[in-house]
Image (tube, rainbow over all chains, first blue to last red):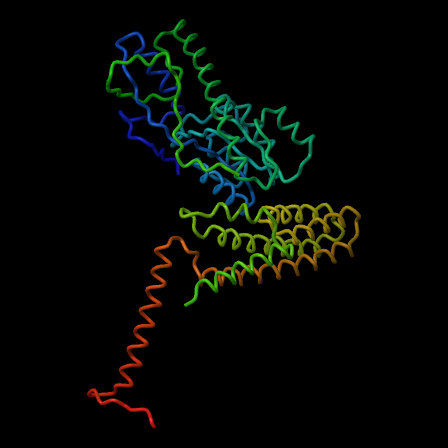
Amino acid sequence: SLSCQAHTPPAFPLPHSNSIHLLLHQAKHTLALSSPMAVAIAEAPFHVLAVDDSVLDRKLIERLLKTSSFQVTTVDSGTKALEFLGLHDEDASISSVHQDVEVNVNLIITDYCMPGMTGYDLLKKIKESSSFRDIPVVIMSSENIPSRINRCLEEGANEFFLKPVRLSDMSKLKPHIMKSRCKEHCHQDEDLLSNSETNPTNNSSSSSDTITISSSNPTDNSSGDTISSSNPTDNSSG
Amino acid sequence: MDYSNLRRQAASLKKGLFDQGHLDEQFRQVEDLQDEASPNFVEEVVVVFFKDSGRLISNLEQALEKYPRDFNRWDAYMQQLKGSCSSIGASRMKNECMSFRDNCGQRSVEGCMGSLQKLKREHAILRQKLESYFQVTLEAPPCQSWCHDRWIISINLLTDVCMFTMQLLRQVGPAGAATRPAM
């Protein structure tokens, strides 16, 4: 399911945006110069998209991810993965403008050997897309072939898991997600900076939902950008 | 109902599966994923495995007939099956898959056929053993807490008390008249 499960009740209604980090950024950009206020943000579990043509392996990876406190969506092909993300197969560089559901995926984990579109092909499409190139991609394979592993890493894969995937492998995922969110933050910093110079009213985000923020205590949070993760049921011990 | 006996039986069946090499460490990894949120996970996985592997074996057999000496195709089918065996820890089956792929590499039709027969036999044995195991584990659910044990003990005690009372009543007989044992 795509519903966000908040661990703590949000202080204000959250829109479905592509990035909670972007939301924070917009809030900062809009309010930083005015009165300082604390913005409470509910931390949703990270959402992983798992791609595997084997029904057995899909069942296992889903359980592995859920046990490690991830929200999971599984699909059985690279094509379906692209559909889910809203990317067109033929031209993955253009994301669908009229998506019915806004997708928030924090990591993609895919099998290498799949009929039709391989995991490697999927990796390439994702890295070609402007909307999703920063999402970490993990490749899984039952065969330990160094040239294959290197090819994937060179194409931008963040990690390579040898199957069968274990619970202990799950702990390697979160660091990649956190790193990519920092990278995204930097990209948006640059975007907002360049946009405000040329056109101050230009909103670089794809989300046009309005944000209602209630002020609580007047502590200035503009220095600390850390979003604490709350995963109390993290069972990622092997 | 003596659950501890059934649980001993289940443990013994499982130990046999590991000792005889039918299952390996990966099966324990799958078991570790079972919890209160997913209490039948292992059984569900096993069911999916046998459905999936049955289908793959059937596809392979058709391919052996329809595409003679197409070792690449046969190998591709077997790669999928080997992956499934590996995911669940079906060790003996996995070995036969590897043997089949070796025979594909050596382009030996006879070797492939031999490996496939062995694979099917291991498939059947594993299915039968796991079915027995699950049958026993379902009859004797694992003890989740001391409350469960106490409950079982209470039921047993109550049953014993009832039986004893009934026996007493039979001896006493209708209208309180005692049935004296023959002297």
